[in-house]
Length: 318
Ligand code: AOF
Ligand code: ZN
Figure 1 (cartoon, rainbow, N blue to C red):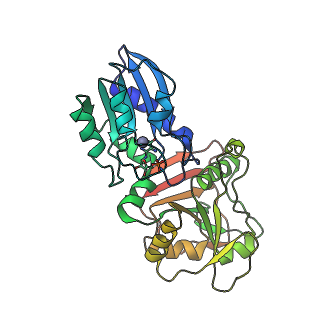
Figure 2 (figure 1 turned 45 degrees about the vertical axis):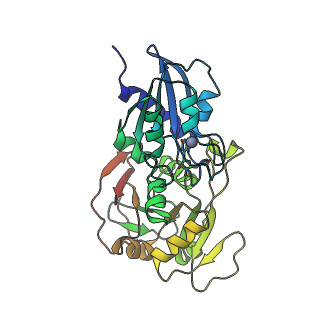
């Protein structure tokens, strides 16, 4: 059976994900080159400041004439940046067809890359697996459209919404903990409230995943929301009066994505004021006495299950 555009785009998405935790405020992008129904080469944006997916791919093959290039996102057009634009490169390689999942939300490129590629006589197909491709980089899209940091809010709870069990730091099991470290790695800053900081003494570092061995990986900044704490070795105490302004300021400092691990008070404030773009509720399969979340969870869009009975309840605002 012949592979479809969707099949190759799915492969490009898998390639894009290899840049997880390494592209920082740049999007994860993957590419696949196909000729005579064979995959000739693949590529991805490997790290912030490094070659783009297209440049990575074309560095691996000369056999490009007449081929079809699949890229998760429109090739970049603008030049005032760290690496050369991909649009002229794509044209120079004499491919016959370009298939993209989405346009680049960066207004410096949006639509312009595709226009120039079409003008060069290359057939362009857009919107293949668009929803999946959009899901790769929700933070980048928010950054571009709203010039603010994206917020991934995480809470951990029991089935009866207890967020704090006395004398116990982790509510959920090892598999969730590993995923939490991958989530932390995806952000440029991790935040907790002062209360959680005092009771849990969290390290707020990425640990125990192989990404740490990559020379391009950098630990996120560690922020503690507190009006009283001041000197904190390795942590930054921050105060927030206006969340929207705070997120804009963070973005200016190079934080495209903020991961907030909230306790009961902070979670209530953020949920009730809708200060999150993506909410992950990590839920353990039991009930317990302790401090509960004193507000309703928003409607959930997806539920994933772990082998020990833990569940990952996801709510996306977008
Ligand atoms: C692509 N392919 O793999 C990526 C793209 O500073 P630079 O040179 O790394 O450029 C960053 C911009 O390039 C980013 O804002 C976005 O518009 C685009 N990202 N484009 O063709 C890629 N990562
Ligand atoms: Zn590019």
